Length: 104
Image (cartoon, rainbow, N blue to C red; front, side):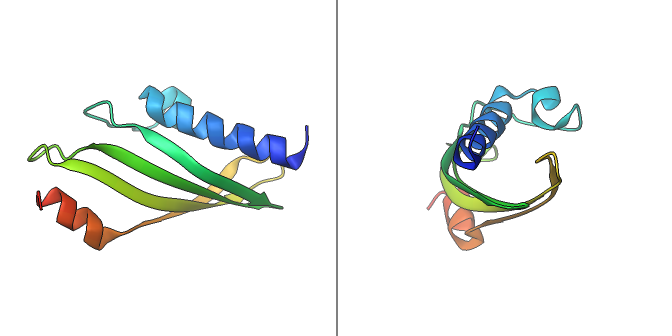
């Protein structure tokens, strides 16, 4: 399997685990809370050595007022020698999220 194939598989597995709603699939059984079927899509995924970038879009509704949401963001991952995520840092447009959750 090439690095490109493995990167595509990592992105697909992560997205499927998140969308499954299963804590076991998502992170080995830790806390995972979701209230609705809010899909996460993988917009792109890149890996170089022990670093990866997962670019995503989340769609759903804000629980408090049912306002529709479409949030874009990304996660930077640090990987170990087995390509398991050892650290994750995520970003999204907080100003746009606040605008959407206010129902504007």
